[in-house]
Image 1 (cartoon, rainbow, N blue to C red):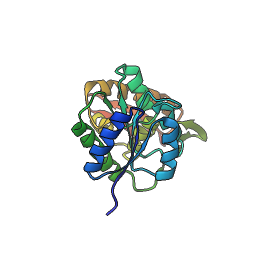
Image 2: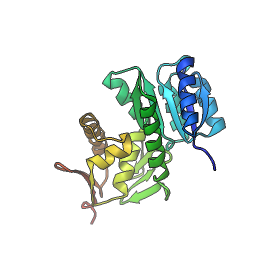
Image 3: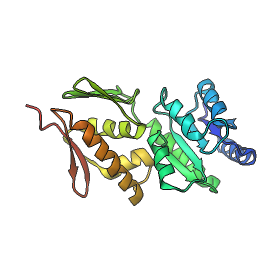
Image 4: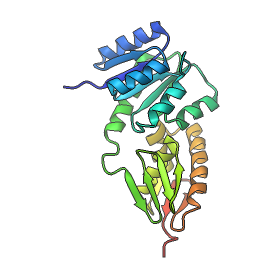
Length: 230
C-alpha cells in the first residue's frame, strides 16, 4: 500500500531530523530539503501529497517557494512551520496558498494531527471538473482564474477556494464556518475576520457581473445569487 508522501522543508537540521523521524514512525514517506530552492526542486521530482515548510530559510524562503509551487499545483496541501507571530505574516502565508500553520515550538503530536486532517480533507476534495460556469462568469480552479464577461482576474489560492465553494452552491447559503474549515481547518474569530476581508475583495470582482451578486446572510454566511439574470 502506498504511503502518503511528505515534503519537509526545514533549514534547522536538528529539528528536521526529529520531525522526519517522528513522521516516518507514523507511517509517512518523508523527503527533506534544507532550503526553499532545494524544496522546489524536490517538489517537482517527488510529487508529494503534502508540503510541510519553514518560512525563514536561506536561498529561498517558504513564502516564495510556495508561491512558485502554486503556479502549477494549486491543490497540494501546505502547512507552514513558523516562529513568526505577526498577523501580517500569517495572512501573507494564507494569501500565497497555505492551508494551515503551526508556530514554533510545537508538539509533534499536534503536527501529525494537522497533517492527517489536511490529507483527509484533500482526499475528499474536488474530484469533478474544476472548470465551473455560472451566468456570465467562469472559474478555472486549477489556474486560479476567474473570468467575468471575458475579463480575466487572477485569484490567490484562498480566493479561488472561496469562489469554488460558492460556485458549487449557487443561490444557497454557504455558512462562514464551512468556508473557514475548508481554508484553515478551524472557525476561530481571527479567521472570521480574515474571511470577511476576502469576501470584500471578491464582492468587488463580482460587481462586474451582470448575472451574479455575492450577498451577506447575517449571522450565517454568504450566498452567490443569480437574481440579476433575466
